[in-house]
Amino acid sequence: PWLSAGDECTWYGLKCDDEGMVVGIDLGAPSGEDNGLHGIIPTEIGQMSSLRSLDLSNNGIGGTIPNSLVANTNLKELDLS
Image (tube, rainbow, N blue to C red; front, top):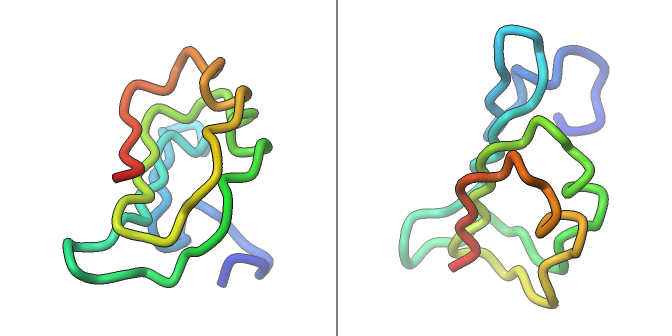
């Protein structure tokens, strides 16, 4: 329930630190499968300053990697394969 009220740290694919900041997004799908994600990566995702890992692998993601994501110095793992 992405747009529901409540703690986003309980949402599927999100990992939070002890302070409740989102540090990981894992929406990658196993090889040969698809989570149904299609489109481009929104620039706002790069503004998540606590984000350390982002996995969107095996989905229908296209376009370019947003500059805001490239500039996020905390991001250590990125899988868009």
